[in-house]
Amino acid sequence: MNSTDLIGLLAGICVTVSVIPQIYKVWKTKKVKAISLVTFSMLTVGIAIWVVYGVLKDDLPIIVTNSVSLCLNLIMIYFIVYYEKEN
Image (cartoon, rainbow, N blue to C red):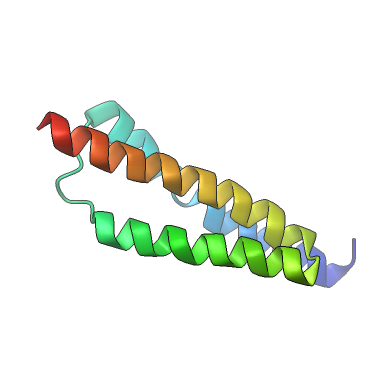
């Protein structure tokens, strides 16, 4: 892995883990009123496009980090929809 890939991987990890505290908070509190479904949906679509871009470029750091981000954001969207229905 060259230094460019390492920088890309580090950037991707930072972006990926940034959503984990929000997911944890929603999971614990079950409160999603202040969280925008539209924002998370657009972010998720953008991340899915990054995964496709990574595949087309054969860029493993982009593929791996954005795939994990995609899964995490889909979890967040599920929580927003699920907990909004409960309230």
